[in-house]
Image (cartoon, rainbow, N blue to C red; front, side, top):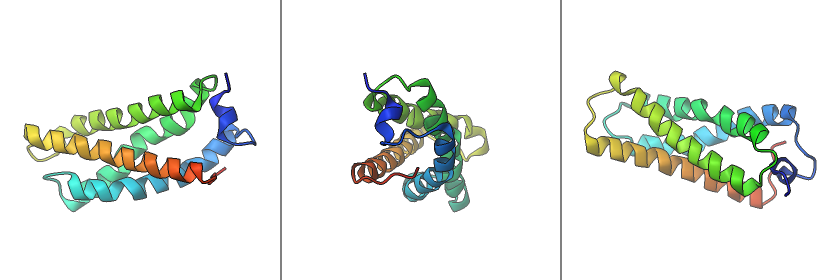
Length: 140
């Protein structure tokens, strides 16, 4: 079975390559996801929405880029993507829910819309990443 690391590029990236990629990938992810959160997160101020765009990604991105690749180097890229792209939105929804005491009162519908917005934002960044990947764009 071809490892995920081998499928990244012809030159197998090292952990140093992944660390160098981290700030660029994080910034790109925030730039893709934040506008969707700005549009769809209900009952939050502009500042709170912007903060969530930065903070939620900061909670999951290092794990997706640094930890999971190291743990999953013997698995296929598809398996990695399935796990990483399930982990990120579910964890971000959970972290968003944990922050509830610091937010305005949320009703059930507000939670559903917020979780859908977080999942949509993650899906959008995944799709952009896959388009870049399929067109040979590598950041390392």
